[in-house]
Image 1 (spheres, helix red, strand yellow):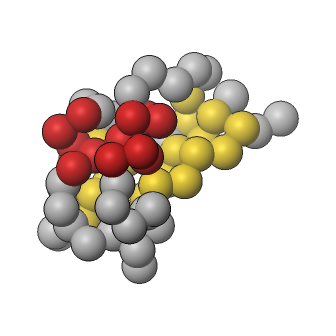
Image 2 (image 1 turned 120 degrees about the horizontal axis):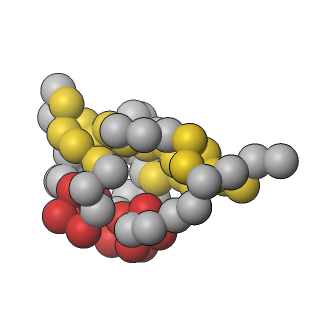
Image 3 (image 1 turned 60 degrees about the horizontal axis):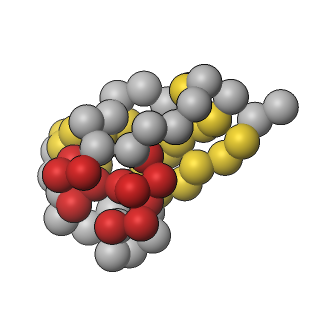
Length: 62
């Protein structure tokens, strides 16, 4: 199981993550994860890699 989160204090609202991964959306000028708990990652690591401010956190749970 993986946990995916956006750290709001670090997010600058550039929406780069939303351009590479459909599990992210913009809300109130900040990125937000649609589904935080995932069995496996698809494009979330790509989103983390394009984030200019390292605002995306991916943790393996369990």
